Image (cartoon, rainbow, N blue to C red):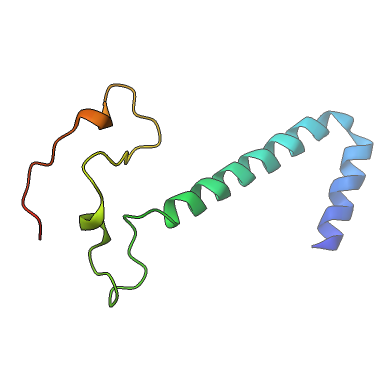
Length: 84
C-alpha cells in the first residue's frame, strides 16, 4: 500500500496533469462508499432476522424510500393495506 502511494506520488510529480484525475477518482470512490453505507443502514434492511424479520412493516406510508423523489409527494400518501 505504501509502495503504491509512493508510485502515485512519483507519477503525479512527473505528470502534473494526473493530479485532477487522482482527485476525482478518490472523490468518486469516497462518494460511492458513503452511498453504500447509507443504503446498508436504512430502516428497510434486515441484518438480524431473529429480532426483526420484516423491518419494512414498521415504516409509515409517508417514509421517503427514494434518495430523490421528484414527482412523489410523500406527505399526502395514505396506507393502502392491513397491518401485519
